[in-house]
Image (cartoon, rainbow, N blue to C red):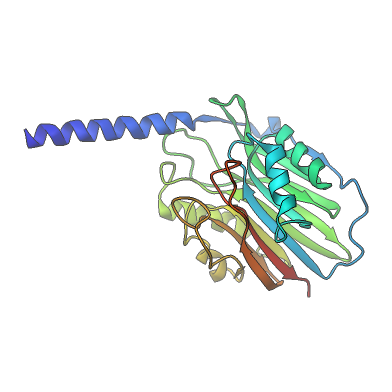
Length: 269
């Protein structure tokens, strides 16, 4: 009876995992078919170029973009950000948040999500002009869906400086193991290896994987603080070549998302 109970529990557990995984399945875009959406900042950039206020926020399938923008605009720590890194976005949601905050943006989807029938990916919102941008495909596809995680990268013209910023969303525990998640982050860090100034932020789906950034010469701005999800402190900002002046966790998302935003103020050299 004990063995049978264990077998039933195992089968139910496997079915639950597969059910959860099925909810997250989608399809990768072929390299030639990836849609890029972008718009320049609607106003001239700030007069001063001595610091960057960076916010990262997973908006939970872009379900409530207007409320997400209002949340960021209402809190003193996230209001007036120079750069906003968004995850779990589609093009329309990205545009709506950017317009509400008076920012330009670059958006690339990671996948076409089968359940929502919308794109699912990462965005960089900015008050500074974008000199170049790209979509990075990360290693280690989901063990269930076979889809790849990505990062959206944008090189910002911050006065005379060029700062490369990345918005990324690493694999979940269902998608990949801890080692694969570290490898995904290292792929982003490797892209920034030759750069003097860089920012990497997003939903890392892990409390400690950002330590890989420290090993690569980045400062872990958001190491300390409360949980950003019910499971732990999974959302982070890493900076390279910039001095962290302040960092913290934004307000409770109040139903807008299952994540809280994080923020950091980084000083330009």
